[in-house]
Structure formats: structure tokens, C-alpha cells
Length: 181
Image (cartoon, rainbow, N blue to C red; front, side, top):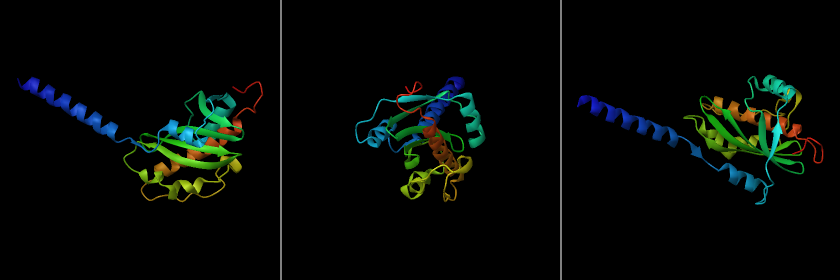
């Protein structure tokens, strides 16, 4: 009898913890809505950028970590591209939408935040600092991004995403080339 009650309590605790964990995800904007808005309601078909060994090595040096994906989906119209990227803050991924136009960040927006701290990076007062940024020497942003006290890991994650999006946008094959999708 005690065993059955203990099993029920453990099962209820598991359900409760799973529910609380899922509830920690804060969706500020669905990725598909970000893409639709990025292209004024008429998004292009998604394309894939295959990451070569050379690019992977460059990314490892740039980000101080391994890029786990072999390909990355993006959307493009002319010199404008949109990227949905995930980067670990402390423990969980932060999903960000980044629009690159003519080699500059036009917009960086937190779409889904899953961490327990650092959520302040979702606000425009922070993300607007990236607007107009380009990649300088050694793929560093051409400007200093002011951090947020208590959100250091989230700030660093968004900086890596900004740098990654700028790098990836430069890797897109020109329209009409044999490598274009």
C-alpha cells in the first residue's frame, strides 16, 4: 500500500516538474511570425547553407565552440537574409531571429527564452544595440555591446548569435551560382 502511494506521488511530482520546466519557455514571437514580418508578409522559400570543413574550423575559432549543425536554414531576398539561431545561455537555448541586410544587422530579436535568468536581453533597449552592427577584424562586432547585470551569459549568447549571423550571411552563394539552392 505504501509502495503504491509512493509510486503515485513520484509520478505526480514527475508530471509537475515536467510541466514547470515546459512553462519556463517564454515565446515572445514564433519563429515563423518573425520570418513573415522580416519580409513584409511575403517570405521567400527557405534555403540551406551547408557548412564546409573550412567554415566549421573558422566558426570554431570565432565562437570558441563547435558548431553542431551541418547545415543552417535561412531566408533570402536580394542582399537581405533572415536567420533563426539557437545558442545556449547558461543551460538552455535562446532562440533569436537575426536579419542581415547588405552585411549589417538590421534587427536582432529574442524569439524564445528558456533560461531562468537573463531574460532582460529580450527588451529593445538591449537588442537595439546590435542594429547596424557589422563584423570587423577577426569576426568581432564593430561596436561595444553594453551588458546587463545578472544576464552575462545571455548577453554573450546573443553576441555570439549576432557574429554567427553576420558570418553566415557572407557565406551565402550568390544568386545563380552553382552552389545556390
